[in-house]
Amino acid sequence: MADGILIAGLFLILIASEMVLRGGVGLARQFDVPPLYTGIFVLAILTVMPELFVTYRAATLGHTEMALGGIIGTNLFDLLFVIGLGALIHPLASAPKVLFRDGTAFLIGCAGLVVCALEGAISRGAGAILLIVFAGYLAILVVTDWRRAPDHSVPLARALLRSQGAMPSLAGSFFLLLLGIIVLGLGAHLSIVGGIHLATELGWSETTIGLIMIAFGLSSPKLFVTLVVAVRGEGAIVVGQILTTCALNLLAVLGLVALVHPLAIPEQLRHADVFVLAIASLILLPLLAMRWRLSRPRGVLLMLAYGCYLGFLLWRQGLPLPWEL
Image (tube, rainbow, N blue to C red; front, side, top):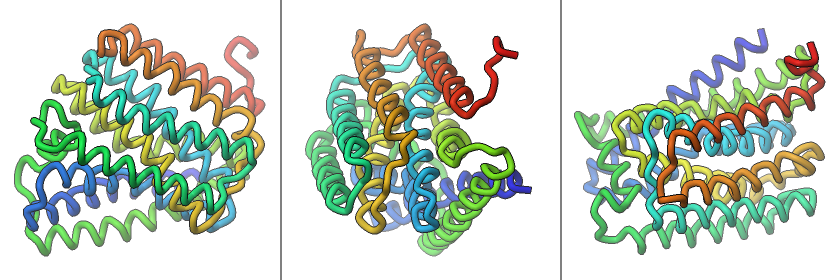
């Protein structure tokens, strides 16, 4: 029963994510918002709304293990598995500007999370600092991509890609956005409630449920987009989107939730997973910088790294590894 509730919640999140994005892009087109601003202020922000809704709902229900587990888990899944799979399909180009700008923002978010882990919590003050950094990052996005061609601007390229084809009317776009937000809220609630009950049924910690199952559900929209874009050979969009999303998860999502509801960081996350995320970022960025291209072998290496991390989570949970059976 619990797994059904969790799956239903994650499915609603997947559907609602697309509704919110189509509604937001449709409204931007109806009001003639320039594609660059659509990419930065509409697509980038709406893309992390599932993480925001799930994290906030888990925090308000008093389950910060699942809230932070979901954020850390989805970042690790995106950085290792999603980017790795994209490179396996088609080698991914990583523009220096994207890597230095978006990668630096992500590293700052990781550093902030590590500092908070050492303190044991993300306080309101820390949340405010993260939001200030987030605002600065958005400003840098606008300045650095101003008047650039789509090939040199990931936000602009994403906006043009999403705007292709027929778009709903003004009323239709507003309805899609509003309905998507409502469904997203329902999906977030069901996924957290289902995760709580599933953890009880399996005897797993809520941290593990967040790091694995909630994380996969939150990453599924980006996984689908990555598969489509990688097949088209538009690797720069993949790398830029993942780095931007991960940066916004740490800066905007955690900052906003902590500002409203301070987050205590559970011991497991504080002593292991936060540092795994930081180490993964320090490994990934140099790999992307090698000839500014992520090759298929390095993509396989990232996927294997995620497989090892998944094995570590299951071992920590007390499950036997294959060679222990």
